Image (cartoon, rainbow, N blue to C red):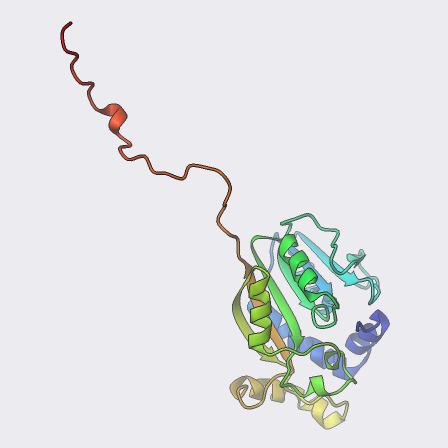
Length: 246
């Protein structure tokens, strides 16, 4: 079940809780990927709140929004880079993407295997993907008052296993969003403290957002080619045997 793009926009841009969630997740993304100079950066789902830091230096930034969710123009006050897209048929050439961020896309998709296959197709050799999903052990996944309360929550083991099945190699993982999902003033004022504290005690207090960075695993070619080694590669340089007189 996809949330409507208007609900997502209102949460992330017009509520104090949503802005706090946006900052917590984006800070973690920037720790993993501090820059993307000269690269093609694509977000799928509702990942545009995380892409703004790359607008200045990236070669190209694209925000793909799935058709069941709907699309909105983004970024505000700048040329639009958001595109309405089918979930499993992206308007992107094969191997064109250097950095892919997926948020509010995988957990709500009815065909997650096809979606991951499409992500694999679009990602170029050496490219990196960051999958951001609700964490099964987090507080935010237990409430439908935030977008992280919808769709299928994951554990690290579940998400990494699913990625491996579709050609991705998990490289790093982390959790974030430790602050309670409350609009009350006390929790909003102490949000930064909870995020800092959560990083030190995360095995005990699980974050509500799971992030897994993965690379594209490229298999060795299996087509026809030279399969046998030459037994004596320098044999051609050996002197010819003398010919017996006739």
